[in-house]
Amino acid sequence: LSFSVALLSACLLSFCTIAQNIGCPALQRRINGRCCNECPPGTYMKDFCSVDHQTICQPCEEGYYSPEHNTFDRCEQCSCQHGKCVSTNGTCLCPSGFLCSNSTCSVCEMNTCSVEEKPKRTEHPPGQYLYQCEPKCPEYQYFDSKEDTCKPKTQCITLGLVEKIPGNNTHDSICQKPHDNNSVYMILCFGFVLLSLTLFIFVSHTCWRNIRKQAANKKPIQAVQCKTSDFHLSKEESGFQLVIQDESKDSSSLSMEDLEKVSSLS
Image 1 (cartoon, rainbow, N blue to C red):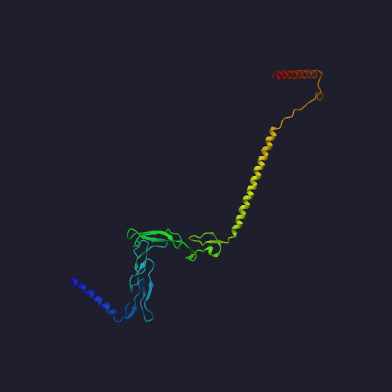
Image 2: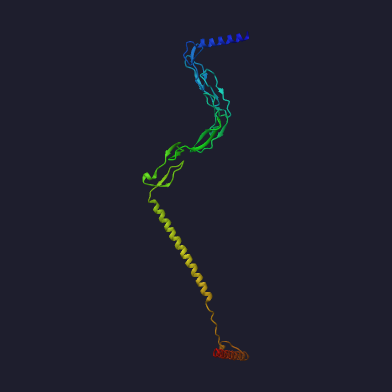
């Protein structure tokens, strides 16, 4: 009996709802005798329609969603780890700077890619996501962070210039005129010559000083000749000096005789 009553009540409610919407087009509902627009997914009804205006809808706040056309006065709350979801279907979202780690986005991980890179997602195992960073732009382009777009790298050779600094993922190539290199070569050559000349002068000066030192060390020492008359000696000292001179003469004469004998024997 209770089941029959419940079924009858459901049928009557459905009949009443259908009866209320009789005469109203699709996506409208009869409210207070008027056909009012239903609010689209992602919004809720802030105010009923009236003689002056149609239904006033308001977007769902962050962390809330409404999946269907409705006349509800509020949105449903998301059941996500970070409290963010798509306002039209309740699919979880990660905050800025994070990436979904699985298909339901129930877990988020930090985006480690730099400005000029983008994350490439692979699924392994099913339902689990892995990310690898790759350049946003192809090899012949660079990423302009100010305009947030890829631009072609300047081809210096097509402009009749030479490449001074090659371009990379974030900067364009820098070109210069070919004759600019001549000044660099001249400066390098002049510096090399100046360095060589300085080294030659230093080595020559060092060698000259060493030669002078060696010459000074090999120079013979000259004996100082003194005369007896230069000194004022007493008679006793003068007599002693004469004896020494006579002995030296005798020794010198003796030595000369010995030398003559040796030479005759030989």
